[in-house]
Image (cartoon, rainbow, N blue to C red; front, side):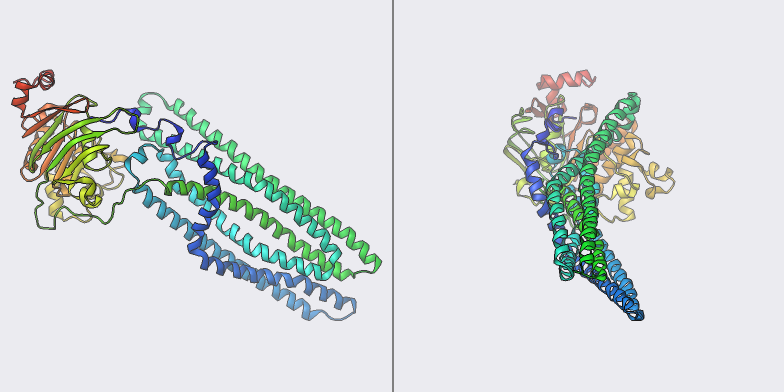
Length: 606
């Protein structure tokens, strides 16, 4: 069960995490690039968004004609004429404008859903292609939050920001022009108000963006804390740590509340100031306009039309203010998404196959030559000039104390990590020169904790394989001693095994992992403590299965229980990141003190 020391596989500082500190230069860079990132998300939907904007714009233009129609109604009434025509025209404008505005809103909402869907597909695809060291330095809960809540903010902000940027701006300009045609003096009062609102928005909007980013980071911390607790749920309960973990979640929730309130406060300041200023503008225009009507400079109908335009302008100003705020929110979310999109990923390529159907794969050879490796710069080497050769076919076991570098050897073969020096070869070819998908298609890997995914037993067996015939499934079930398990499940292979396989025992999960690896028909089979949770009978049976597989496949086994590897063709003894000795069980008993000590401790000295 050799692994990197815990300090080597978890974040040691905030610099290692995706989430940057408040004073981290990366955060400032993210805020500056957030606008470009948001526009990048919106660009593929620009045609559909343009259609939505044009529909909304037509509806708003019909709304602009309504005050003029009302002015004609009043003028006709003042002259004692029947105003039936203008009233009908006014009603038609109201209905048509409402319908077009509604259609425009629907089209924009559909565009926003498409933006969110594309972002989630792109982000989840990238998350699954992240390099193993990158994932080990990040918080899974925070990554999940970026793929869920951050992308949801794109849907919330996209239609409002686009509509405000185009429709709001154009209609505001058109409204101002119409107001200027009615009366230049009243227009001057109105422009002064618009200028004041613009200053407020320019000052407040950056604060909205920063506060929103802090809020989303807090949400990410909640996700990380919850994922941590649920990932060790039984241990948490057995330790009586529910209250302690609940306190951690409560603190994270309280921090999210504070940052959310801060963001809401800045949004409220912006909305309140703009609303109050618009109301003051109405009162000033009413007073000045009344004076001008009294003096005979303008007529009552002109004042009424101007006030109607002012009423129409007020929500447009509010729309612009909200749109700027939503753009800041969307930019903050886009910046967080972009951080994930900049993380290092693997070039997996198209799925590979170990051998064509119907053709037995040939066993692979493995060579380590002077391999040196540390999990991170500055940390002690886990491998120190490790060299050994495993010929094709047969069973090779790796034994040694914890921390010797046994599991690390498997990680280097799978290219989860790459050596700092030296060479790891498969069939004489450096694993770094293999197409990654082809390399892993040739390898079956059973991890130390034998993870089982939520879904059916069939889903877990065929993971990465796709479709498998009934004969192939029966074969691996028999080899992994899972036939009885499948028979007793209510729906057989189509029974759901629960979150992380919670409806299966530890030994059953190990056998599922072994069956899954065998179904791949690998040329190289890596078993990392694959029988640690099996009873004696199942261990003996699976030992025979491994021996059978070793006749046609190269099998590498990491084992602490030497009873599982005494019959291995060769045993590699590792200590402190070095290969100490290589030989058979009998040779090592006679020639290596460490192996003899391990065997004696486990009463295998015969």
